[in-house]
Length: 161
Image 1 (spheres, rainbow, N blue to C red):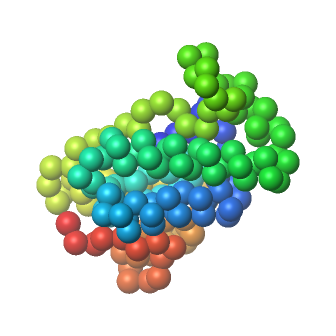
Image 2: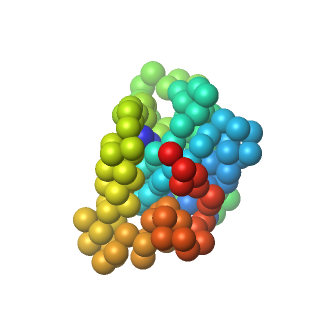
């Protein structure tokens, strides 16, 4: 599943905004509302392979909570240009908010067997390599590729499918 920042703005270039995403996933994990199998966070979108008793509700909570925290962070740090862009690209029907952090939808794809699970996790782990950011998937800090090599990652994932 992919959640895209509105107009592909590069919101996740700062460790603080990435930590907001990770905190949200940790919370959903603790509540039993999210099992995270793999993830990669790029500058304008996270990819995740996950399961939930109610995945649409979990994603809605994720987007709502992270949007509020990201806006708070941008206001606290006076990131005026980014806030202006989030306001500029806000959809017209979003009348109750000043900013829109996330594009609508989350592009879920069903994973029906282990082969497809492995394919999806490999695909997301190789995104930073394909973009030329790193030479190996495990070199990307904001990825579960390290977890799959038995190295400590930034967040716990479930490696049992």
